[in-house]
Length: 160
Image (cartoon, rainbow, N blue to C red; front, side, top):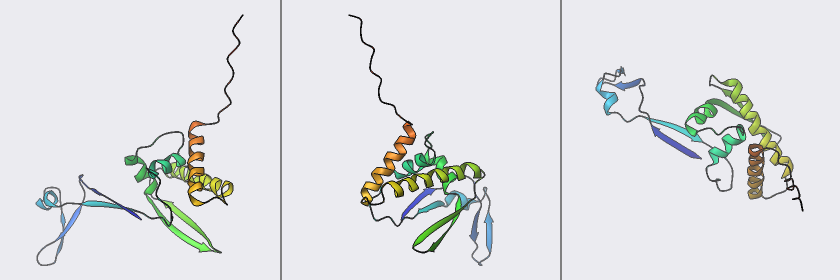
């Protein structure tokens, strides 16, 4: 599990309790907002038993969208704004996601790309050790980024 925390610096609504226990809404002109430290938390959970690949968020986003590099600042709200539900049956877990972002169509296509990458690794590397599965996944993502490659054509012969 990874817990990310960042300080919120933009205008938000804050509630506070008075001495008598009454809850009040602190508005931007109130002194509470200036003195308060507000934090936003994001929790990423996995049951993987192997080491985390360096900069794994970038790899995940490239699996989701291999045609363009996306910054974490914009891709995290896009791909993490969903409510999920996991169901298990016959030793198989299915994750159902309901996107809460306005770009639902884009999110669905990106998640479908991630699903295709995972399916490829499961089919191609089913018998491999877990660490080799990571190499297979990263190879798949890199191939999607670069695109199909053809063998190099030889240079034409020089005239004698």
